Image 1 (cartoon, one colour):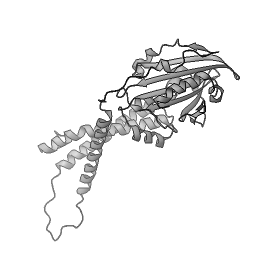
Image 2: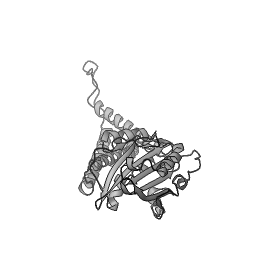
Image 3: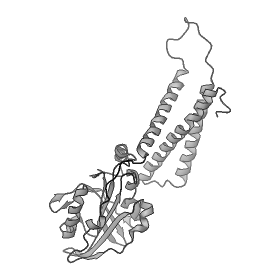
Image 4: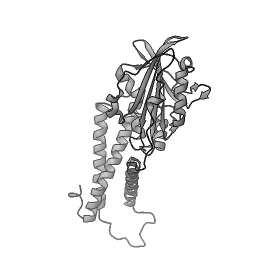
Length: 312
């Protein structure tokens, strides 16, 4: 466009300089659109992915080509003061729109540069995750056989711990699994850690989410009320699993309310964006029993007492 549609050097330079931020802004809009569609249960693979890609390419080309043509337009012949219109000439409206688009593009670039820059502040020592999980529980068999480090590359952290407790309560045979993952400050973004929830991971392992309007629960352990947890129920082969999980950023739980609400998702994105300057902890408890059946078990109380200094 700069070589064929404009002749003045400064106009050619401007077209080239605006190409990257304009493309970035349009692809951000495309990614956001696809994300919201996927969150609404629409399969974005195939048609949606390709159509939005070509649409964004076409719209971006039209905008950039229109900019080039606009820059090449010669000013109209001088008009005598007596006949000059009092309002702005018609050609000023596209220039105002162009200026707004440029400001928006530069603001978007600034936002991403600011929120995705590496963290430079020194971090403290990582918590000993295995020490948080009780290694023994009277009346329960403790299983630590699962190798979590095979997922280190995917999760982008080597700080992982999980223990399963198998025993019996008044409700019958009971299993409880407690999983912890930790990221140092700067190790991963909030949005990346938030992508590793049971909603995203468990269906790939054969678990099917049970439709349930309750997506948040406020557990109580040893008389202490915990921060609200996201809660789910999954089934596999007729066996249910109740799941509760928390995502802590810089020692404070992120207040997810309804992950299927576009407004809530945008609110979380606005508050946390792609921040990397705080450490993060992901805590997940799963059991074949409701919370009330396991909350009074000593190993549950011990675990959450050890998690309290970390913000939960």
